[in-house]
Length: 102
Image 1 (tube, rainbow, N blue to C red):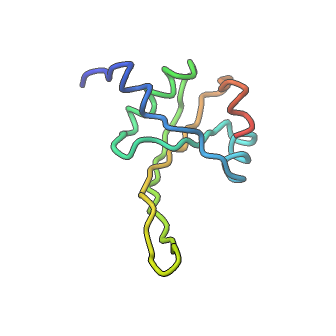
Image 2 (cartoon, rainbow, N blue to C red):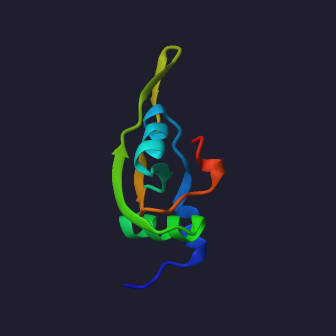
Image 3 (tube, rainbow, N blue to C red):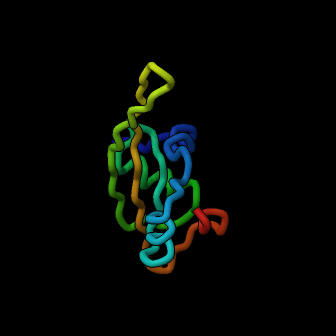
């Protein structure tokens, strides 16, 4: 298995996922939630978080979120499916402060 390139790793994590549950997990369990590429694997996500934030990852859990059905007047549409990753850091590790509020 080859190591992914730094260009690829910088694009795996799209954004932190902001919700009440994500904030609770960050404060209580040293666990952070990210929106990631739909084709990303657990090893890719682990390597990307370790590369971007310079921390050590303990575990990665992944959830495939189905897109919501929305109505626009008389027509209906559907949002894209997306992937969410729950990343737990090792004891003593911490992400940068700008993600603490996320």
